[in-house]
Length: 167
Image (cartoon, rainbow, N blue to C red; front, side, top):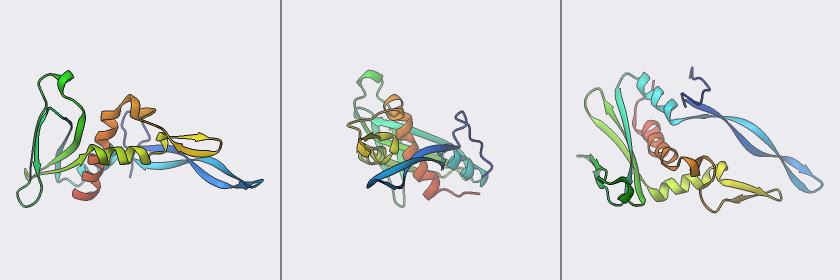
């Protein structure tokens, strides 16, 4: 892919994963393995290389924001954040869009329930207690520190993987 493993670029990551390495004395043993993972910026880069994508946008929708979207033969997405940031309320949706060179806008919208499903699947949201993987009660680590940015990765990833051309 000709990506750089650089946090500043966010194109790809080497992510530590716990994998079962075998058993010793009847108990499972685990090893950490570095796993290559494309970041959403890497998917954006691949889409941009196609020459068909002009730009990307994304947003986090909260309860008091104005938000409408429709998919199908006449798709549209309209988003206007509530004027007072502190009064916007809880997250309801997260969206990502790409503007094609033709002017057509392609987008993906995910409800917060889908975002949470992805968060819970992340190894970073698990704790190891007595050699067993246990899901953390709520967001921890990077998800707790940067929830909106982590959530925005999900529709952007779907958009780039499923709806846009890649080089």
